[in-house]
Length: 431
Image (cartoon, rainbow, N blue to C red; front, side, top):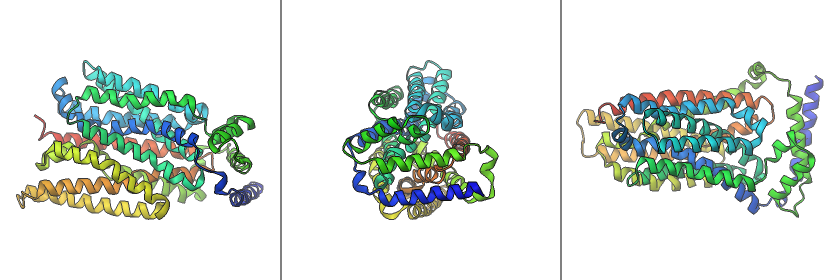
């Protein structure tokens, strides 16, 4: 009872501070923009990893003499590695900090991409794919958390959505450059943003929320002054962060089993449910093997990949613009409905092809369905569950357990889905 009253008084304090925290004291500074840019460099490498198998499929199989099973395993090892990274992402972000975790992810990603670029046999390919997968498992957690913790409240949704925007830019680069660059060069391009991030991390501040937990009050204030401007009044925001930190520490004795208490049931169901929708939607298979889908439908792979590459960034901008105007719930509902409709239409296109009905329309119809599917995925389901999850769990120490659950479950299912999709989709196409 005493704990409940204490938490209630803390929450009342937060509400008072919220009214005092005027947006004029939280302007967007050059440091916030630079810090966000450095963080999303890792997101770009994430996008390259997601779309890499689509652009490099034919080249790798021909140059390395891979069988369908070997290439299918290669494609799924990235998400298998990401599941391993997800297992340690929460604790690592607490122990090493947000910047320290990004440095670790950079080392793993650069090692992985270089192993792929200079691979002589399938073992080096698989090692590189697993290493970069562990890195992107860390990136997918720490980047949106870091951005959400450094940005002002009134633009937090937009800045956090830049994570999804740069992921799309990475996928776009692979789709577009895959038409004229070989798979080794694309692997080197995947390592480049990680190198940029590793250097840029020396010039950006640590998350104020992490400093409030493990650092001194002076370090917290210095970080906020760099992010909000030297002449900004940071007293209210600093007080709010410290109050939230005390709320988290008051729950620090909770165990993993406490996450499943009845009072957290709704939060846990919503958080895991959103991530399951994201992973079970089939987005990973569509994005990773778009070239295979086009080839199987009889549509030009070069034209389809180029058009998707040009379309990736503009369609992500739609979500970036709408997220703070429409709100997250309407975007999630619109995205889920759009994905369901386009996925059913895509299945209908291949059913018509199998029955040899309207064969001249099937290729174009397939391209339109894939494009609309990816567009509706990007505006909501693709990125918002990560941000929505952070908002739901940030006030409790249980957030680290819940985040790990969401990451591991999602990546484990995606790795299996990618392997099966590659096997079933390629066995009748690749010769």
